Length: 411
Image (cartoon, rainbow, N blue to C red; front, side, top):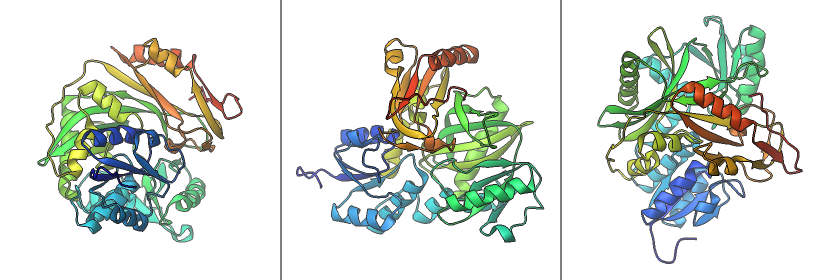
């Protein structure tokens, strides 16, 4: 398994598309890379020196592998629960991690995260935790409400509820999706959904770029999902200052420093409320948009974070708008995406990515783990970017393994 040339071994947990870049950068730093992913052909497999088909959620197994190959590094930069496993393994190996295992757990579990935010004075919505539906009492919360699993690797199971009957129905689903059989019921906040990607260094938040998430409206069953974002968001200096203050408060309350920090908020009437955050990089095309817009490689900085190195934060502001568009499909076995490569060659898009391998099963749930790919366009203003996306959507198709079209073009 380890390289005969005795290179230091890096275990990468999770074969998502951004981890192909992580694997490439680790190789450039002289590591022999081993990808751990439960699937046979995860998107990042081609970039690794070796692939072990094991679950990244199995902390004991990952630690066993790390000891067996004398791993110098165990890392995940884009996946919450895999990040927990990485910190667990590093702590048990006696190696450095950017934050300890206990902290990794607290920032990946929505109940622990929200409890600590409220105690620490970080603005967030009121909530209750639920493990048994019959004993749950949400009467002190104001409708509309949001129901979601307490711990998951995706946005699956997140629902808006306007009635008690809806809360009861979706709580069953959320608890079933949770590994700890717990769910969160919280008050829904009206406003713009604004997120930012930043680097937290020496107690100071350096915002690389903001974005306004574009929600899917009117597509069945109260889903709370997005079809893409505008990068950067159009914000006042006052709101950006409040976002920085919130990020720095998160760092203080949770004991975080020298780490990427992604924060999701609701902004309304100059008030900022935190939905959730993570000391990691967003999935999908986040790292690419950040690099295209600012010149800064956040995945490279994340590696520095795991190696106890403080990166040089050399980045610039962009004068262009970037828009990403996620591709959702009907329930199927994924085959291929057609047309994006030609549009890239014609410079109609900046880049694209495919999230699923041939034969991957896609269920009916409209959630982040059921996206099959995405593409990015750039423009000098939002309206032009939206026109570009509509043009691209008319020129591409997604097919299942039988060759039947499955792309949902109404999202």
